[in-house]
Structure formats: structure tokens, C-alpha cells
Image 1 (cartoon, one colour):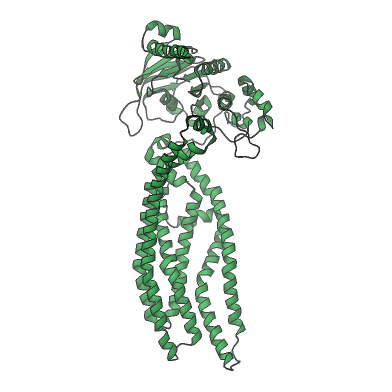
Image 2 (cartoon, rainbow, N blue to C red):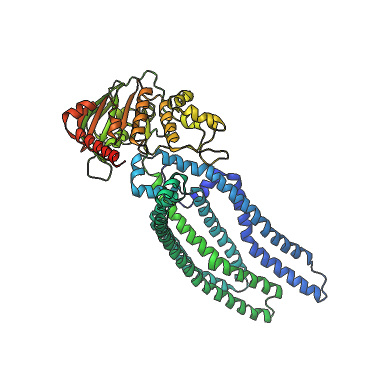
Length: 598
């Protein structure tokens, strides 16, 4: 997806690129269907006139031909409806394969700051939520409008040939009707934008209430009713906004459409005069009246609704234009690079200051320190001290920092993302649980071209080989509940799978950003101790609030106000009786209190 201004024509161009043959069929069938009302009026007039003449004794006319034409028109209505339905469904499937993939790739290429910004995140949500159906909806409304106009114009031309002023009156009264429809469509999309924030929160609460991960806590703490009320409040707020505007649109369009109905009735009455005087044949009268009343549905509902939907979908194109213009991170989709000769040496932070875009407060302020190859470091500090922010800078998520960061003596900004992906392996607190096999979950840790990650070795290091032995298909068993035969792991086993994924990679630096926060302190210390042993020869960074786990590090960095307030080994920092010692004593006192209470 390239940056461009998306216009109405793109509702046709995008599907054409996805499925040209299907698009040709859809356009052909709709064009033919648009001419059917006029053909039906002509065939009806010919059939009725011929049948009346035949009943009067005139055998010169051919009644079979118009009858066959009427049957073909009726048959085409049924056949085209069924075939078009299949064509539309196949088209949406092709759009899912192409356009949805393009939006997903664009989303993956975005600079990370767009993900953390609430406004752009809402924009991303609006554009990427079922984009295939949005494009299909835009195409449907656009073709419905174009071919609807063709259908109405052909009927009006037929009417004008008999009663020219009636055609002009109907066409004139349709203008304000269409203007109301356009305005309604725009207001509907604006209402959808307002409802988006409520919808996003409702979706999150729905996931908490329904997904398996929260089942135990829902049972133990009994918060289901409380969250249900919050979810219902958000859902109702979203529903009321959308439904209120939808109802207004319906009333506007149907209300103004009554004018068209009245005019059609008047036209039918007027046509009685030329019928009585013999200027119109009975067949022509019936054909015209049938066609005119057919206009009621198209002009009082179909065309205004199509215009309303186009105005609504046009606003989606505006969002799509803004989405395509969001800045990207070069190389975001590149695989990790092969760096066989890479030696880390040191990571140096020199007077690094950073604040998140759109904010004034510095998370890091004049941050200076040096990390050496092969050492195990623990980053500790209060929330907001900048621990996780450091990992975002190191992995290239943000480059708009002040100061200098050097990796192996080279400025971090000079590295490509492919190189940074190869240097760092990260396990985050909210690590991913991929619905693929256990083997693939771990192999994802090394995506370098031609890489052969040691999955079995990583599993053995963390005891996952015993877990795999109990699974129906061993390490090839699909995880999660998406696929048939899928098996879910326990929380601790998922954590081990995430750690194994980190170990399977060849990253020189391994970062653990509180992935064990859900474990008790003793279990967390065991995990870090095990991880430290199997990461011998690698540089590791542990981010933790639990100082009992931090004592396993070679050096502890205590962050405060965006700087390194203290650093040293566990024993050295306790001897300083400073910030670390106070934090450690506070946590130790808490655990002693727990033991007394127990």
C-alpha cells in the first residue's frame, strides 16, 4: 500500500486488481439488470397489445415473442441474483487475500509511535477492521448508484416519449432527495467515528469476559457481573450513537421518498387521459405505469441509500488516505540479518534523553552507562523510571532520542532494523501465544534466511521436552483452540515457550522485560537463574520489580528520574545504604510480614 489520495474510483480499481474476471462479470450482470425495467416495460406493452388484438380476432401479431422475452427477463432476475451473490462472495474472499494483506503489511511497517498514540490507533482500527468488506461495500454502493441512474434514465426516457413533462418533474424532485442522502451518509460515518472509542473499550471488556485466559480469575474474584455492567454501558453507548443516526437517515430518506410516490401516482392518473383518448394503447399504459412505480423503489430508496452509503464510504477513503500517509520504519518487514562476524563488545549510552512524541516529560534524562559483552544486568526502579523505554530504544522502535547509543562502537541509528533484529532477542511481559505448533512457536525466535534454530535444545534447556512428550503429536501439536486437535498450555508452560523462543535465536543480547511478572518471587528467581545459566556467553538484561531476582545479575542498574542512580552488585548496593537498599529492605519486610501472617 503506497501513500496516495484515495478516491471513489479506487472502489473499482482495488477490486479489479484483486479479481479482474469476477469484476467483469459483476459489472456486466449489473449493467444488464439496470436495463431490465425498460425492456420489461416494452415487452409488457407488446404482449398486452398483441394479446388484446388476438382476443379481438386479429391473428397477425406474434404473442409468443414478447411472452418469451418476459419469461427471460423474469428468469434473468433469479439467475443473476444467485450468480451475483456468488461473485460478490468470491470477490470479498479475493479482497481478503490481497487488500487485507496490504493493510496488515502497512500496519506492520508503521513507526511504533503510531501504535502508542491513541488518535492514530483509532485511525488504524477504523481502517483495518474488516477492510475487504469496506471496499466491497464501497463498490456495491457505487455500482448500485451508477447502474441505478442508468436504469432510471432509461425508464424516464421511455416515459418522456409519451408524457415529457412527467419525466422532468420526477427528475427535478429527486435532486433534494439525493442531497439529503449524501448529508445523511456523512453524518453516519462521523457517528461511527464517535462510536469507535466506545466500541474499542467494549471489545476489550468482551475479551476479558469471554477468553480462556481470564476464566480462573473470573471464577475466583467473581467480577463478571461488574465487568458485564461496564461492557453493557460501553456497548449501549456505541449502539445508541450508531442507531440514532441510522434511524435519522431512514426517516429522512423515506420521508422525502414519499414525494416521489405521490408524483408516481399522479403520473399514473395523468396517463389515463391519453389512454381514454386513444393516444396510448392499453399495453403501453400498463408497461409505463409498471415502470413508473418501479421507479418509486429506486428513487425513493435504492438511489438515495446508495448515495448515502457512498458518502459514508467516501469518509472511509479519507481515513484510508490518512492511514497510507502514516510514516513507516524502513526495513520493518525485513528478516533478521545474518551477522556471522558480529562481536558486541559494548553497548554505550552517552547523555541519552528521550520523551515520547506529543509529551513534555522526559522518560530518560542524560542517561549514561556502558553494558559489556557477556555480562548479566538487571534493570530495576519504580514504574516510569525508563526501564522498558530503554528496550524500545535499543531495538529501534524509537530513534528520536537525544544523545548517542553505540553498539559495538557503531551508532545505533546506522544499523538497519534487520541487523537490530539479529542482535536482540526479547521476551516481553505480554509475550505472544501463537496458535501454531509448539515447535513453530519456538522456531519463530530465529527467522534469519537459511537459519536452523535448535528447537530441541531450547526445549531441553527449559524442560519443555517433557511437556512435548505428553502432547498428542509431540512438539508438532498445534497449540490453542483455533485448530482441531489444538491443545492449550498452562501459563507457566507458555512462559517457558516464550523463553525458549528467545534462546533459539542467535541474538547477542537477550532481554527479559518482566515476562515472569505473573509468577511468585521464588518461581521468578528460579526462571532467571535458569535463564542466566543457559545464556552463558550472551549479554542479558533482566527488567524486574522483584529485587530477589535482581540479585542474580552481575550488575544491577537502579533507574530513577530517567538516570542511573546507582549501579553495582547486589552486595555492593546494599552496602551503600542508598535507594536500592531501601527498596530491597521494603520488599524483604513485606515478605517477612507475609511469613508471619502465614
